[in-house]
Amino acid sequence: MTEHDVLIAGAGPTGMMLAAELKLAGVDVAIVDPSTTKDREGGSRAGGLHSRTIEVFDMRGIADRFLSQGQTAQTVRFANAVLDISDFPTRHPYGLALFQIRIERILSDWLDELGVRIYRGTAVTGFVQDQGGVDVELSDGATMRAQYLVGCDGGRSIVRKTAGIDFVGSDPTMSWLIAEVQMSEEPAWGFRETAGGWHAIGRGDNGVVRLALTDPELRSGEPTLRDLSETLIAIYGSDFGVHTPNWLSRFNDATRQAVAYRDRRVLIAGDAAHIHPPLGGQGLNIGVQDAVNLGWKLAQVVKQISPENLLDTYHAERHPIGARVLKNTMALVATRRTDDRTKALGDIVTELVSMDEPRRRLAAEMSGLGVHYNLGVGHPLLGRRMPDLDLVAADGSLRVFSLLHDARPVLINFGKAGSVDITRWSNRVQLIEAKYDGVWELPALDAVTAPTAVLIRPDGYVAWVGEGSQAGLIEALTMWFGSPGAAQRT
Ligand SMILES: Cc1cc2nc3c(=O)[nH]c(=O)nc-3n(C[C@H](O)[C@H](O)[C@H](O)COP(=O)(O)OP(=O)(O)OC[C@H]3O[C@@H](n4cnc5c(N)ncnc54)[C@H](O)[C@@H]3O)c2cc1C
Image (cartoon, rainbow, N blue to C red; front, side):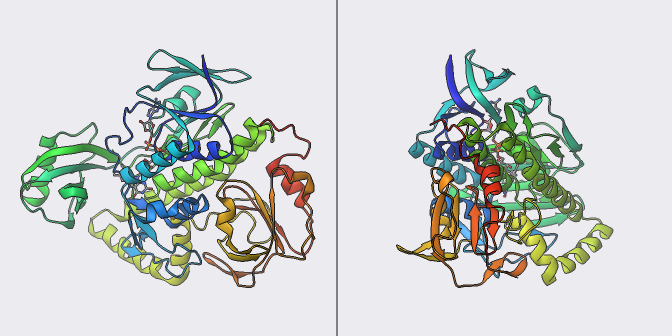
């Protein structure tokens, strides 16, 4: 029987990011996906990346691959307001317009470089877990064994269902028809509002026309070209000679979240753990960030550096983030209705969120830059993203994010050289002596007191802040990176 340390169901953005994180940490990981090619049908769903996801890719040294293919823009929107983040203290104070198919291709090429194995053309159909691992059944009749199985298999996740994890939330109230097609006539480009809702026609690559049309009433099932033609005529009075669809699909505003992100040796991430309508463009982004939160923790458990309960911090940290995104997308759907009263509400919400304080808070949340994991009380940096500061170290200047390319934890000591001692963790945690004389600023918070040292997790979040002493450092190192005596499996 084929065996891997970790098996991932699904080579979407979440599964690929997780595989990369595990591989960087030296874990034997493989992915199973039913698609036979890298460019799966419908791969152009998402239209881009928010700032924090660009930062995450920057931490791994691959941001330029995305930036060079897309267009930066202010992409955080709420109601009718564009929430400009150009004043946020980040190297990437913008979003990136880039279709999902391109994002997936870049991730997939990165996995090739890292040497991640993907079993294509076969799907997970079931599994049985025991104390030592999981036997995973595949649609081609094979069985694989892994220490852990992670379901990154999308909203209809077989892994989540087989694990018996409840998926709770709201049933759909409206649906949208989406397509990539050819048109023989010039369509009505841009947005159109009708009594039924908002509709959009945009330009895709190579003359392709991209459509997102609100269905006149809640509909389900895969649409046909004829459905699309009829819907276009109902909205625009013409179907603009629509023909040759690349793909047609439908999504709705069902909003659901898994009650648990882990059941013993089985975990779920991305759309398998949470679904919501795409308003605000957050689904792919939070899937990638789920993966980055989980990857290093799972690697440490597999390598026996950390006890299994480290995995519970994945649910504890990521479930509230998902719940908040579900809430803001439900609010976004509500503000998109086109009856007079909802439009009046939408106008007032637009005015309110355009004011500085609400803009900063909401934009920090939706861009992902404001994520704050509850790691206890303390300095404002604790549980927040480490800013990508320009440091001066013994070897010259360096960026904080360049220290995270290998997804290894790092302690930066800004105090007197040698004043912080992590010798007993030196095989796991890098120690950098550096200086930084600038202001410490965090998105949506003003300047914060400069720390004398910070312990940064591989996902870029601050696990401990030194304020002139080593108080709490040993506890933080043990909590996040295992006890010094832990038998590390190589
Ligand atoms: C119209 C539209 C626009 C969107 N726009 C945005 C946007 O602008 N920004 C944004 O962030 N998000 C957006 N999203 C959401 C985004 O597309 C999803 O959140 C994202 O694709 C989730 O990634 P994932 O890897 O978790 O799941 P998926 O992308 O669904 O990938 C799941 C993978 O699992 C595989 N799989 C399925 N079943 C099995 C099985 N049994 N065994 C093994 N593998 C399996 C599938 O083949 C697939 O490769 C949009 C979605 C839609 C529909």
